[in-house]
Image: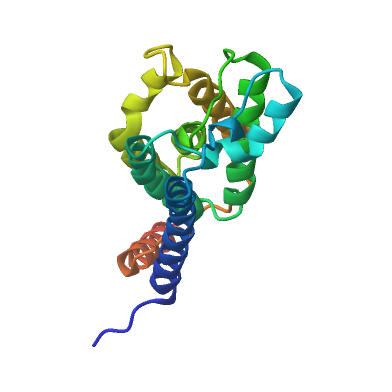
Length: 218
């Protein structure tokens, strides 16, 4: 059996770790919704309510609350995929991005959004999606480009969510999450080291042949 190279083994371990973190967060969201239903609670008031002092708490709690099972289900798969890509591709930037998008999207909603309770993790998913796409274009290494293209292929249509659509959808959360994600991509584009470029055996031979030909011609 051919041994697995250390780099590939570390890569797989990082991917598994990123997936576990994403699944833990998704499990927290589903646990909160289950508790809300079982105990007949109304957690909507833990959302962000613009320009009200009490609504500031919602900046921290709003992304954890969802209005219905369908609302939660719609956010679950994007949360898992995008958070996995974030923690896998940019392990040094992931925590600052996750927390800053969380707070930045909520703060933007509190300052500028319509008077209503804004809930759900969609501001977070929009922020991560825009971060992953933009930073891939800025860094332009193979891994960043691959992640950027995959994310855009899966969720590129989310870009239209930053504009007003249905009355019950908080496009403001999407918009401020996206803005925060783009800004973070520029700020943190060099925080994670570039992946090592693979060098194949024939490349070294080619260099040696080139050196020999130069010596003979001199």
